[in-house]
Length: 117
Image (tube, rainbow, N blue to C red; front, side):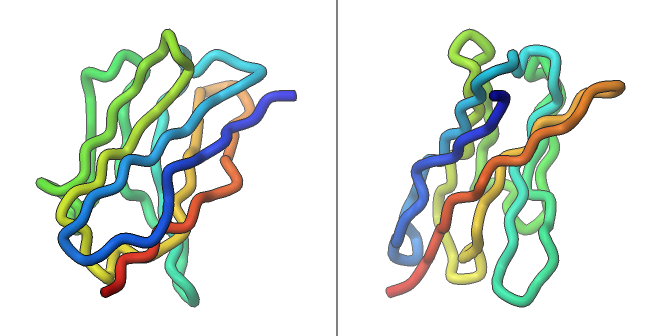
């Protein structure tokens, strides 16, 4: 069964760091554009960062530029999101997303990130 599983979320103080991981099983991410999204309570799901299949093209939401870094290891079938200098407004459920033209896409189940003192 093809799926994405996120991990690494938790409770962190403002200014702290977390590293999220997203492991794919049942398919290879090498052919997929990978993204991280987040959804805060009562809000829509927003795009945080995207990385191309080979990792050469990366885009970030303005709100996380300079603080978050997306990366991928196709050999480990894993995508990462390094989050530094976290702020309370970063509190959300973070989702991993795999997209490939002509193929079905995949969402993970989400991991909770809470930034609070």
